Amino acid sequence: MKLTLFIWRQASPQARGRFERYDMDGVNEEMSFLEMLDVLNERLVEQGKDPVAFDHDCREGICGMCGVVINGRPHGPRPLTTTCQLHMREFNDGDVLYIEPWRAGAFPVIKDLIVDRSALDRVIEAGGYISVNTGSAPDAHSIPVNKDAADAAFDAAACIGCGACVAACPNGSASLFVAAKLSHLGLLPQGQPERFRRTLNMVQAMDEKGFGYCTNFGECQEACPKGISISFIAGMNRDFLKAPFLSKENKSKKMAPQ
Image (cartoon, rainbow, N blue to C red):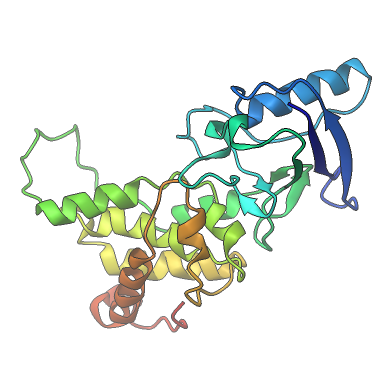
């Protein structure tokens, strides 16, 4: 398979980026997209050129590290698939591919296809946890959980924090990510004591880190490799509106709803 790649190259956060053309021949359709980039980098190193920098880790669709925009779509053309699990059989001989990093104000480019997604970590630090020390793991079924709530919590917990929702959103909003992280705790009994304080803190952190507002475009849901529903955003907004009245620790806080 022959492909023409136009890849975003940017030497540093301060440098001016540009697309560079690479003609790839002999691409095996069974390769993953990242394996194809590995082959390209091997050839660049052999030629004494700087390899393309890109994020990766587990390459099993779990860690959320991989992530590039391929022909305008985060993670590429196949729905519910991370970049590392996207295979070259999804493309055709002779295709032209434009490969670039996530585009969002909260995700500054570090180098080439790598962006700084630490803003998502700061949002989690603001409240994406249960602060009570519960000791060792409890026995199974020791805390009764409604099945519908458990199923929804599992769906929300599928979020891998890759940031595709932010890259796909015209506003650069992280609402789907934050809503998923809030929901997988807030739907369970263990997360109830801090539920509304957690919502206020994480929404405030999202706003402070430069993410945009959600205006219900729905692009985040379509780009999410785990199929997280935007219905979780509605739940987050409801809790956010209730929180000033139900969280004694945050009654004095004034923040605009997302």
